[in-house]
Image 1 (cartoon, one colour):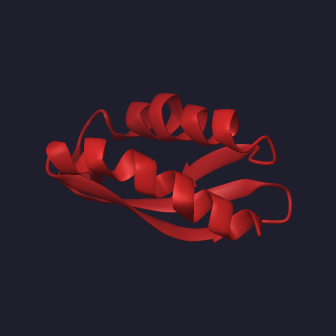
Image 2: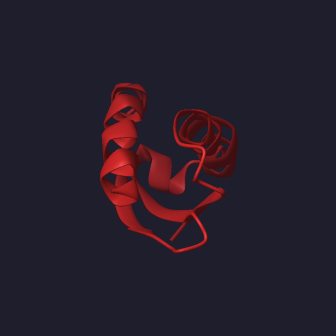
Image 3: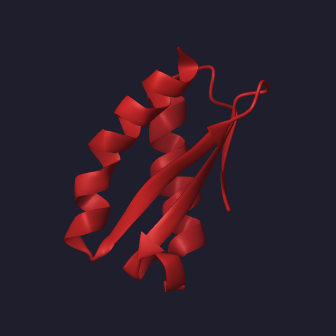
Length: 74
């Protein structure tokens, strides 16, 4: 259930990343609520990727899904 919620929420984030030539791929969600994602395309090598991950993706997922504790890049 949590995995499906995360995947759905990532679909809402994806257009913003794609507009800049990047994307995000869901990897996994741990029992403690840590979501692992992979930034691809322009986002994969961007110097601002960590900020995008934490202030963009993580904050959105935490807002939408209270069970999410953190988002990490792999």
